[in-house]
Length: 222
Ligand SMILES: [Fe+2]
Ligand SMILES: [Fe+2]
Image 1 (cartoon, rainbow, N blue to C red):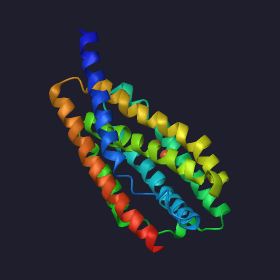
Image 2 (image 1 turned 60 degrees about the vertical axis):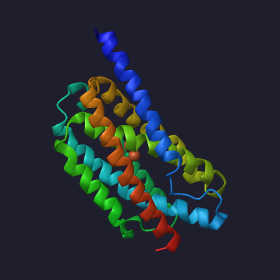
Image 3 (image 1 turned 90 degrees about the vertical axis):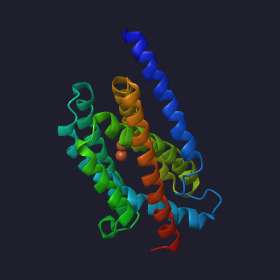
């Protein structure tokens, strides 16, 4: 019985990952790989500034969700994720300081604030939905985004590229795997699979809107 149920969830998780990937193939608006070097460097810096905020809000988000994840196998994985996000926050903040910036002077984009406020407010939703949103859809596509950033930053700012590659990306892959593990465990019925798919759709659209606003502001240089 278990084997049959597991293989259904496995097939579902694979399909959902492909659907999310297909969405993001045309929707990553954060960086422009063809931009001149100075523009690209300013886009990378802008992402780092916003990244400090996003890492800190991720800590708050995980803290808010932990009491609302009754499934012990999944809940037990979240404190380490919280610690990782706190470390990423500190690492990015320090890197910006080393580059001569004041990371605390950055005013976060309202669209990102709204996205995290919404995610925190989702804490009472079923675990299958929450983890589909943030860890499965969100963290998986953010790994893709970090891969691109690392590739593009390799000549422009090797030290920052190295920081992302060695200190942040491996953790983010582990966070995405928590999402996958949650779905394999919980998305075992058509109803739960529908909930997980809908949660990914909601999250992808909201993140895309935040990326569009982010890029528009980065390009204005504000
Ligand atoms: Fe992080
Ligand atoms: Fe993460």
